[in-house]
Amino acid sequence: MKFQDLRQFVSFLEERGELKRIAAPVSRDLEICEIADRMVKSGGPALLFENVEGFDMPALINIYGSHQRVAWALGVEDVEEIAARVRKLIGLTQGPPAGLVNKLRTLGDLAGLARSQPKMVRSAPCQEVVLTGDDANLDRFPILKCWPEDAGRFITLPLVISRDPVTGRRNVGTYRMQVYDRRTTGMHWQSHKVGARHFRAGEQARAERLEVAAALGGDPATMWAGSMPLPPDMDEIAAAGVIRQEPVEVVRCKTIDLEAPAHAEIVLEGYVVPGETRAEGPFGDHTGYYSLPDEYPVFHLTAITHRRDPIYPTTMVGRPPSEDFFMGKASERIMLPALQLTIPEVVDMNMPAEGIFTNYVLVSIRKEYPGHAQKVMYALWGLGQMALVKGIVVFDAHVNVHDLSEAAWRVGANIDPKRDILFVDGPADDLDHAASTPRFGSKIGIDATAKGANEGRSREWPAEIVMSGEIKSLVDRRWTEYGL
Image 1 (cartoon, rainbow, N blue to C red):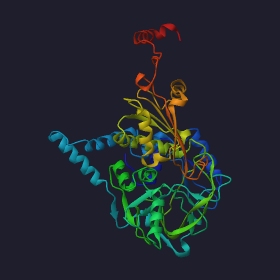
Image 2: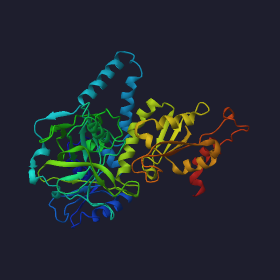
Image 3: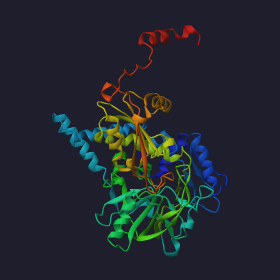
Image 4: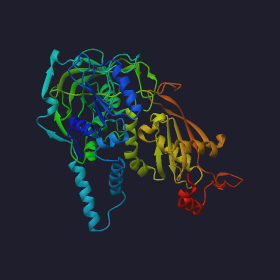
């Protein structure tokens, strides 16, 4: 299944009973978010609010609010299908293929990658209406205030597009934008994000402006791709093309030299001034706490383009699980093969909703030698955004890290705290309010694997209690006889 734009996906969800239209009048301030929060936490559908008070534009929320909807957004029934594709592509790097058939298959895979590169078009639905000057006004959109102590209204589901002022490489990320007035917003480029790197590069190069576009809507795979933790030099729009197995069409913006997804609903064009910051926040964040006010770049609007009768797509976060958890879980599964390429002893990993991506990670490994669990901890902390993870718990290969009850049991049973817990210092997420120093704090590693004699044990590690296969089969066969 492939979706050209958000409207096709809305129709698809509606046909499957996964979207609810709300005709009753609702307020953009708090009310929509309370409804959406109840829906996501109860497994409810996506919501299209057709009557937002004061606006003639519908607001769409919770389209990614389940594992199934995220999979459909990415064009599959199960995200593991995409992970399998990634494994196949990664296999290309593990030596030359043997035999003519495999060579042809390799060429086909590479050709598929080439065909997935963004495709430039001359005209696009996202530019059916072009607004500049005083007409370019953010008050046109039903931008939400999500939580009572938020500093204002926030654009929460933009694809923010910027370009490195030195290398010219594009980055696309999902960064919130606090609305200050009709023409300016905050740009929440956290310290460790690529957008912030572009901003710092602009300061160093003494650039007068750094052009930025923020696209709202588009095909659901491209919208999701902005949340992927890709390497800094990898183009998210190209990655979306790989996932879709079809190139993403882009169009040149009207007032800035950037390209935006051609099938977006709305595109905000503008710039930031390197060195210019303003207080942003507080904001009710995915941590379940308000992120505190801090200084962030300021986005200046130069133009708005949009489709006729646009849909305003948005999301909200808060105490997990929220919509971002389901988006992040898909990233975890799809990126696992790439992580295993770097750390091949990793069997599986789990970033549970309660861990909000950076608080803790559970990982199972094929353990081969003393200190292997610690080696994996350090390796994970050295990988991109994994550097921000506060806690890593390592288990043996056979442990189901997605069963939190099993994981908790094994931590309690398998660790000697003095021996199996280590502490290190390192970078912390901007949103980590518990860190002793902003953006820098301590981390914990827990080795919950079984320990052998080669790790200094003077007694045998006990066997796990498991019923014999013969008896289990017997009980399976006789189950109906028991009348249970």
